[in-house]
Image (cartoon, rainbow, N blue to C red; front, side):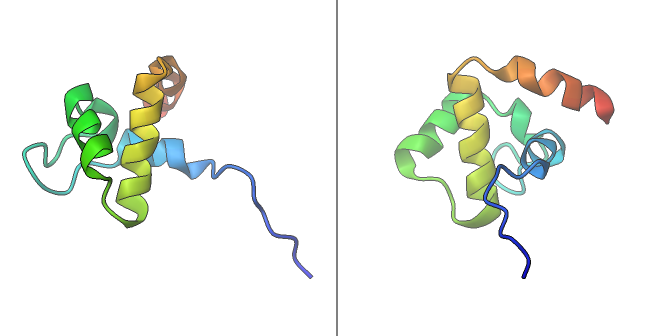
Length: 78
């Protein structure tokens, strides 16, 4: 029987750096480059369901906790 993996998904940070916002005012902007006030608005309003919402919440937490430096090596891999 295969053991379940409950650890962090290593592709999440890659997606945050590579995925573009699919709609709205910031359509085409990489999620990691979305302005703080926009992410704060989503935090108050509620993130969309699914993967996009999870990724927006992830970048929100990264930015609000001063951890953007963690994405620099990933950005250089592109």
